[in-house]
Length: 295
Image (tube, rainbow, N blue to C red):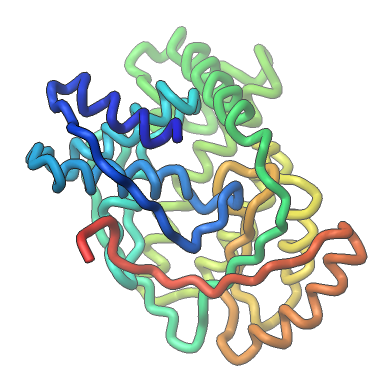
């Protein structure tokens, strides 16, 4: 209920008073699986109350309402990406979002012959909230160190790996590794969008594997169950790419898998996963649909 109460609170802080309302939430997004279920609840609630009470708050502001609800009620100092994707999603497209300027671009995701397969570890990511806040603090510490020599720097997106080597590595090796992952991942994202524009899913998939290695070894937000699933498909010719998703420490991996190989992959992997972890493996075939709206 904190997410819902947080949204109501944010509307009131903006001068919009709600009356009483009955709210029923239904969905098929597993909670605690790294699929941004909290953002989905926040955005759905914000959109519904905005329509119900005629507040006429634009979508761009509704995502801020949802984000602040998470900050102030759930105590997770999240960025804007999950809420933006939930509110502005477009069928069969990914969103390239600049979180500083809020400029965005839709990039087509053409999956001819392939599907997005989510593999749920069934490990609830209970550490994700506290660890997210800690990673954010570490990145901010890295920016502060760089800014001592380069005062024009505002965030890690302004920083190069060479600057991290110069300003951060000797001062704090752990902060250096965290920041280096983020700087390199920013570049991978831009390259990945170019891969999609060129229809090169193979190149995108290779970057997904590299991203997971960084999340596991450098940013350290993975877990052995997630690593097991990514490593298990790495040499499978039917899998172009795999990585963890969400805040980490559990949840799902996302995989680009040849459509005709999904059943055999899951049948072969599920018993191996259970033997290694004692947990059931839950496959979810996902699609990219439009964001929050009226039915």
